[in-house]
Image (tube, helix red, strand yellow):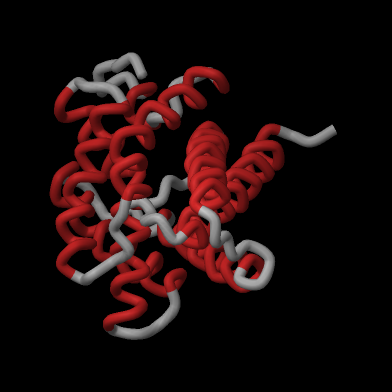
Length: 213
């Protein structure tokens, strides 16, 4: 029987694979993706490199931003998650480019909606493992701790910030982006509650306040 550490690692990897699939589906929908993914796609088109490569680069930058906000040492272990996520996105985009090319608006909406649900599920699963959050998700927890608000509020606030950045780099902004900003937080919040247990590491410590999700 698997011990706890192996079980957590399996949940961690499984969640990231599912998360990467969801991101790729929203990108393939061609209706606009999440503000963060839109920024990655925009940078990929405007500057070069793959979408997954920018996932890692932005994560590296955000590690230092999170460190300043939290006033603690940079959490470089989060780069592992960013690397696996970026690699997963690139692989899924490669596999789906000939399989998922929706042309009808209804099929595009199904692809987008399915992607949003899969992203929420994958994120909740890998966060539940409490292994190494992607820096952008770590920022979500930091905002949760600083404001006392729930994940829905933190996720939506982060989406709005990246939306401005995505527009700056001409990322794929569309109806899908609006739906992600409005529904991304609630979907994640639903799956976090469904799976159970607060995935916020600091919320479970003796030195930090507990916040309900």
